[in-house]
Image (cartoon, rainbow, N blue to C red; front, side):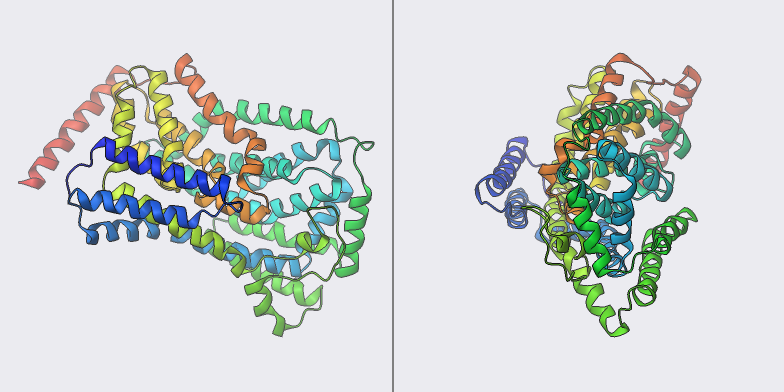
Length: 485
């Protein structure tokens, strides 16, 4: 263990990291994020070693950080396989085809947000929704002549609404665990912040859609896309069984990975029975994705092949590599106490309830940016601010709600975060392009802060509950002291 790293040195690490990321995004022309994060990790390591931290300890911190992201990486690779198989099987093309028949351009953004929200609420996974329903929504948007960035924003908003409100979601279970609240108290308390956030978002999507009447949209794109789908695939309502079965599998509380693998198996069956793809092509599609035969361009940015082809495990390797680089940097920042020091410095300004909520929200966003991991953005601020909320006699569900209103929600807005990188890969839209349209992800943290300053729904403990809490703290301190002896 080394000594506490001075705040001015932590500030230098932060400034160098931000400068590297900005330089890469703004000036290199292609926004490479892997190398800036690795260089930032090297800078953080040098600062840590100069303060007496041994490399072996930093290495363990890195390994521990990467270990936390392994489930995300495995899900990412599995979703890549699922996308490739469902495209080859005609499942995603079928969803696009029928979606173009039933969805009006004027209500598309509202529909995309609500649909993704409902499915995510049912299965508890924003990633699974974005990788399946979300991919289809992007295809429909292009066919309707709607900006794919707007569509991606609506998909992300809906997916994260459903994810954070679902009892099946990992983050929805993690936040109350860290804060000391119960799961259903936590979900019920989030209704106060997420409901107005969703309603405001839907109103904005409805307003954006007003300019998308039939007279303003080139519906020939939809016809062209549907014709190309029929030329390449055998389309039938039977194909919609695949997403329905996937939702059913996860609703039955099958874990994410086995559930996704079940979806892959269903897709493989449809590849053979519906599209006549021989078994000897399975491995290539699962690894490298499906290659569409269409040569038709829809506009300057998209071809039919872009929408109907792609996926596969290899398509996710860039994102997995980015996660590994980000977690390397985040691991050093966490294990050396640099993140904790930053959180402690912020806590000094949290004199009122509103200021405490603001500091918590900002800390979660900050950890999402620096540590690149939504789980750490819930765990670290939750651990740091738990006693501060208790000292203000605020019930634990207030803290758990703040953690989700910021840690979970804003993770998809950071390009190098595991969530932002994954959304970009699934939807084929750059994070910075869809982020301005992911309205719920921006509005929800602001609503949470507003409630903190106004006191709306900020439930407090009774005197008896607070006295019991202090007694429990005293007993815990005695047990800890005895264990040291």
